[in-house]
Image (tube, rainbow, N blue to C red; front, side, top):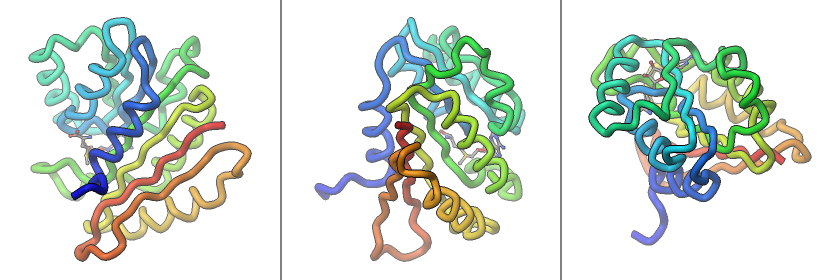
Length: 190
Ligand code: SAM
């Protein structure tokens, strides 16, 4: 298949926006796979700030980072991403070049603990303030689970009204697949 699938497309957007030495955010740590990817992109001189509300996700991410000797370039917050502008030190505000959100629930864990539209939107608003110009926010939207359709619709409504002078907003989606396939919204700050 020549068309990029959803996750490779998301990674390519981040690869393009993030350079060694950058400051980036993993808004939904989960098992830490994206954090490792981001930590490799920013290199030794860069930094990743990661957020999750589940202790399990913090533990899993910490273990994965330790195994790969990447812990020093990552700060993990056991806290919701809606707190990010309070928790990321002020000297980094205006410098964030890339953020990833993997929405929905943590695979293999409690399916009732899911991301929610109000907190996701609050975090995007904060990221639009603390990102640098051309900084990118990538949302991978899973919407097949309970509450997923509501989150999808709220996010689409919110993202469609972002002023085009404030950000470029893209939707990337396969439109002939069954069973609520994941899709991407990418937001690039202007
Ligand atoms: N990116 C992860 C990975 O590489 O394994 C998968 C993330 S998983 C689909 C979604 C995660 O979002 C869950 O671990 C869940 O606990 C977390 N979450 C839910 N609400 C959150 C919030 N308000 N702030 C931060 N994380 C949240």
